[in-house]
Length: 105
View (cartoon, rainbow, N blue to C red):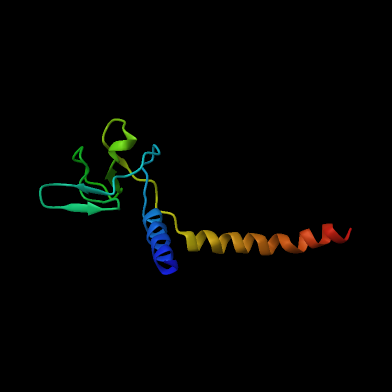
């Protein structure tokens, strides 16, 4: 039972990590068709967008529950959590000596 719960949490975590949003904040669909042959799963794509533009900018179909128009949008940049953690660590390391000084005053 414990192993099943852990596996379930890990799957949920992986699923949440892969969730992308459009620049206007709507959640991307888990799976969508770009054309009759191409299926995109839990991601944004750089294939030609529905308006026919050929750009390197990623886009996705919007989750139907999110609603809104149009039913697609350009994606927010993907977050690099490792990079965010490293930058946070660097900033904290810079501030710790200052905090210690304040504590001893």
